[in-house]
Amino acid sequence: MGEVIGLGRKRPDGNKIVNLRKQKGLKQERLADEANISVRLLRDIEKSNHPVPATTLTAIATALQTTPDEITRSTPDGTPDPYVSRLKLTAIRSAKDLSALARDVTQLEYALEVDPGPETAKDMQHLMKIVRRFVDSRYVRPWEEKDEFDGESFGEIPRLARLHQLLEQLREQGVGVIAGRYVRHSLSRTGNEDLVSTFTPIRGNPEWSIKTDFILCLHLVPAEKQEGEIHIVPGSFDRLVEEARSPAMARGDMDDEILF
Image (cartoon, rainbow, N blue to C red; front, side, top):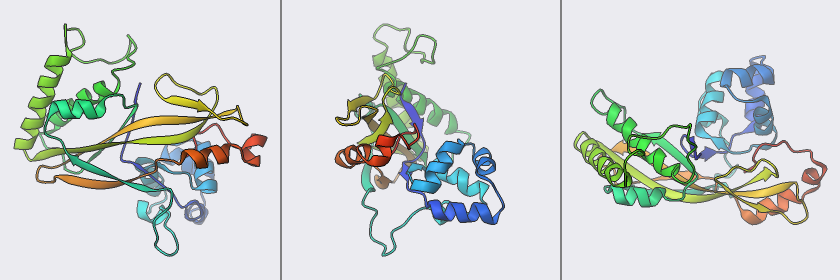
């Protein structure tokens, strides 16, 4: 199944997190528990500044009683982080265009830039469920959630009709959709493969593979907003191969977590 993540990934400042944690007298286990993340992931963040979903960074910041910006890494001279790129999101008005954008993606990242209201919350929820269904279209287990169109002959047709209706209804209520997609490469320990992502074995270190995901980014925004831009961490294929062949990786010092 395609994984749903919040807004794109950000690179944390591990040193700041360590300092704040120690100032508050928190052990890693306590902070991880309060942020609802694994201790292993927290150790990777503090040690290597590995990019994480913005929602994870927000959870850590909340547990430390600070803001996400305070624990987000920036370069000393203000130059862009070389591992971070920008993705342009454009307005979506057609169900057909949105379904085409979602085709073959393996993960969905989304964000709300408008407050849901009593009149819009259900439509926003229903729209996201249909988009999620597009993301999951290549691999849906019989026991997992489907939607009301799966049991119909040629159910894709009424599904698109309903999506188009939701886009129009939300636009009338002041809510628009902007979206874009990108490719993300990461490292994954061989044996952790799923059935959705693409995995490329690494010559010289068979214990690791390059994981490739196609990411759909979708934001619910004020209807007048026609485009937007977000920071992403696509991962460099060559850099990841080089990292996989490093002495630390060869010794098996790294955790099983995916490394970006």
